[in-house]
Image 1 (cartoon, one colour):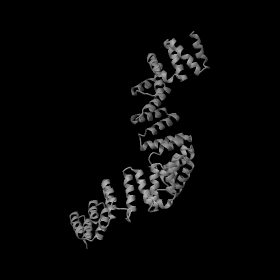
Image 2 (cartoon, helix red, strand yellow; image 1 turned 90 degrees about the vertical axis):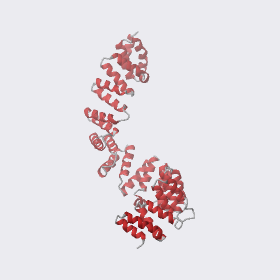
Image 3 (cartoon, helix red, strand yellow; image 1 turned 30 degrees about the horizontal axis):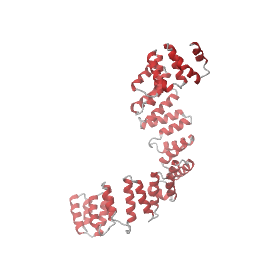
Image 4 (spheres, helix red, strand yellow; image 1 turned 135 degrees about the vertical axis):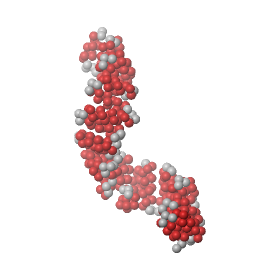
Amino acid sequence: MNNSQKMLEALDQQDLAKADSYFQKAVDEDSDEILLELASYLEGIGFYPQARQIYEKLAPVFPEVNLSLASIASEDGQIEEAFEYLEKIGPESDWYLSALVLKADLYQLEGLTDVAREKLLEARSYSDDPLLIFGLAELDSELGNDLEAIKGYAQLDNRDIYEQTGISTYQRIGLAYARLGKFESALEFLEKALELEYDDQTAYELANLYFDQEDYQKAVLYFKQLDTISPDFEGYEYGYSQALHKEHQTEQALEIAKQGLEKNPFETRLLLFASQLSYELHDPEQAESYLLQAQEDAEDQEEILLRLATLFQEQERYDDILALTVYEPENLLTKWLIARSQQELEDLDASYESYQELVPELKDNPEFLEEYIYLLRELGHIEEAKEYIPHYLKLVPDDLQMQEFYNQLF
């Protein structure tokens, strides 16, 4: 039994001290061929320092071990050193193709996708390996070269690539066509991919594409498939709920929204949509509850404040509307509702100040202008009212009551 075998036996017995002793003897005494086999095994089980020591010794005899040295260096985050090892394998070497592929992987790891593509293009000049073609198509897809990506994927056998990588070329082609805006082709390839092999991401993409094409019935079909087969898929409930709503299935839409909120109670857009659905189902209390939940974590409060103000307005909860001022809303409609509430609560001076602030932005809104003019009349600001009435009558020339009021001022 050679030293390499004795080392492995000691490892099986978890005797690390003895294993290390036999390892040192193996490096000094075992043949190069035996050491090469040992290094490969050690690399495979994650004993990188030991494997690296052997590969360094063998590099002058077996230059291909520079590939393994580069891989180990990259695993340790030593990218520059990894490239140095790969540079030792020149175009004359039988291992040059493998070196090019590994260089491409390293450049991709470094975020240099363009350079990675150049290396794979060079590798393609040496080989027609389907995995090289696939890798190049993947890089083209990442770089947004969708037409080139489609050409690459189309050269491949979908079943073979799927067995080797777990990725469907039909799906990739479908997604590329979708990005190009060629939706009919996209749907065709994505459906073909799903027929051959169910994939939750493909079902999700199909559902969203059909939704975007306003074919809500088919969108619901694929969302339902996803909900049935892959209920743990992340984030599909929002789209599914929307599709059901478009199909006038409001109660079912709310149930799906609630299902999504059980997984992620803090998803703002789902909370807002659940609030809308609750409101449509004549449950303002639940609608308000969802809005208040959304308000707790939302980065942008404006839409929530507007919805709350609108809800409170319908219920004549003017004090609650005024309480929203603590958030310093910037939305014009929210501010308008605050001005209305001040007027309803007979705080006319405050209402007047609020309306004045809004005039520059909303003076072309006839409803706003009408309210402002009658507030001015109520406050006795007749001259100011006379300034705005002509503009209002240009917007609403058939308002006889306003015309009569204007005539009375002269």
